[in-house]
Length: 324
Image 1 (cartoon, rainbow, N blue to C red):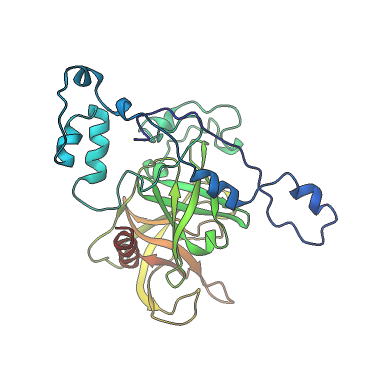
Image 2: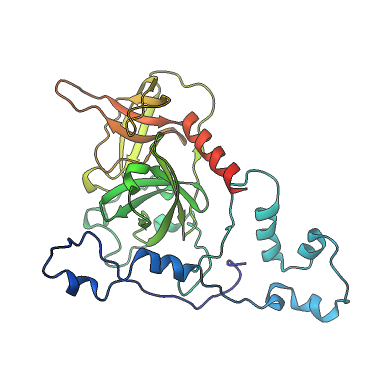
């Protein structure tokens, strides 16, 4: 019931990364620092919500005392807002949907903050935006609401929402990271935790603390020569769109394992640079791939590869089945 109750329970953690064992200032740096395990332990501490707060008070005052024989009967007595959340969490359709399999505390207000249609039109607070995106007179691409900047101790990459609270990215972006800083186009920040990965496919899932707008995954056959667009943050130039065409669909050995079953890639000449990794490759409003790697050896040009939408679907289906 996290979207219905204001949980005043937060904590601040300072975590130090990449401190060398021989650093003479190492102790001074780390003595007041916590570890990611400390954050994980805090997240698991239970919170209490009164059962009576979940019900419509007017119904409680006139209700008869009787047992609920089915979950549906119980749900009918919940507040309308609570009932809508239950319908999402227990209704039909994919298991990859809104709702959480665990209660995640999200700071002073536990309500998921849905990105609204007008959020990109609001006036930025001082310091929220990069200086090169203030008052430029440009109109934001609607797809930006699904794409985020991912920051780890090793650098930055790109991710995008595939469900309201799950972000898909490339595994090499979050490799060796447990916690990830998430930045949205409007400058707001949140955090997420890496909860699943597939090294062969170079894909990973992040459970986000803030709800976002999921993308649509492409289905059907792809026409070679179709216009494709990548959204990402190449070399730190955040929310950059580049365009090219679908050059080919190829099955090749995994770039991370260099062995094992082949992986299906979308080959494109869409410019992709470091910082684009993990970001979406679109045909119009549907994602056809996760931007993954480029061939950059001598005499190579415009040979960029994204993990195919078919591999994405297989990966998400496998995660869904495992999560049941």
